[in-house]
Length: 153
Image (cartoon, rainbow, N blue to C red):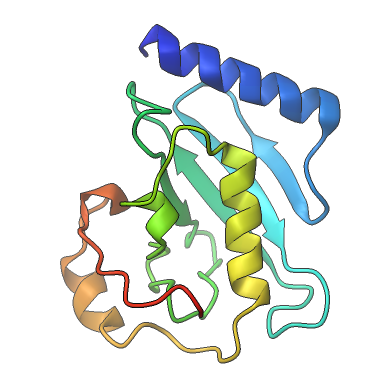
């Protein structure tokens, strides 16, 4: 992996280990600088209260210039949360993972944003095109050109 990505991920991992994660977020695996796994629990009074979901980050050599590939893990009997911006294969339609990505964002900032996205949801439902998207989706969600219709759900 390119040294800029390795240095940045080493710095982020060091901060996570020394400062810990925000409430409801837990680092489960960070064996290398290509794939990290987190659990995300939605706290407070919401449709997802007390649900725990697993989030996978995959990093390419251009991180943090390019966004990580982030998706919910849907194996081993786990399913992605039912949400208007989360496909049943775990892919997430969120502008911060696409055209609004910024190198100043960290892995933890992405986790907090997704945690907040779930907490603020008003109705549990899949995206309207879920079946068609999942049938034709690439393995890597970064290879999808999502259209961001809103930022309020």
